Length: 414
Image (tube, rainbow, N blue to C red):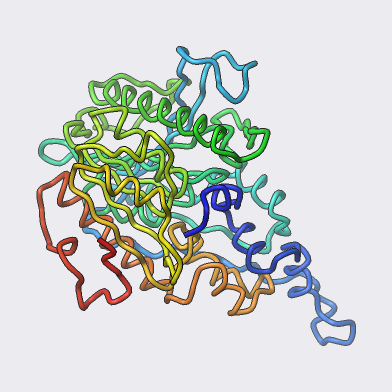
């Protein structure tokens, strides 16, 4: 596991994985070299490459999916990253079991304005890649179940956004969870708001412990505010700042007595910080994120540390500190053959994009590790869902009790 500063200063986006794989070679250069034929090539007269359409693996659960975004405004806080803004603005995305989903169009993986910025920032020539469509349907009616759905909040890494967690989010929603993905404005690379405005990364200064501590405090406040808004949504209030219509039957869909949190990198640390700060959170998962005091002090509620391949070196000392102090249920797992990037959608998207970007198989392996991407995704999905099933639904499939011969790539570290 990398030092936290190393993790946080890497962009958790497609361009970062490529950049880390090909070092100083710009993505645009690699893509152009791949798509530009030689002068004497028989296809030289047609310089436009065929776009590569990327796809996401289908979720395995029985429920069709719906999704909707909401623009939330916390007027009790001046924005901590942009003091000229007198309120903290967030975008969240709800993912849920749906009914009558076929009458609603599929949701894009990333909003159109965010895509434009994403391509420009990463040097991807427009049209080289067609970003995926999700398996969720926009504003489809919510299937509330009999007593509401258990809720899982998702927090992405620094300089990342909610899109990068879609593979895990869809899996949980397809198995009956209501998942709320949070974009932390100004520490994300881009966040698009309903009026088309795109707010970009605005943190200045060195990525040191003080800045990370501030980011964790901001994200913890974001999380608690989102929980407050879910309470209002659940009783029928439309908390969207523009009062945009919300899906039918959303009210009553949240079982707020069963709320957990999942996050990657700084988002994993956010899950640990938020669960300490707010007892409404009943269980948490940290996907490969280092921790800081006081988060390392642990809590009395269940927590899973799920990390990338630690290799032969020592474990992250912050995880050792957390383990010693955590007095609730705990487990630490390692996914062998993986990297930090493996816990994002890049695990499946980067291999698909590699030919268009001019990347070799060894460069892709450097970015996401040697474990087969389909196996890596299946394993993450199964163990994450097993954790929330155990602690939010009291359903135990015994996957977290001991190593399983079905998952030889999982190491039970403790």
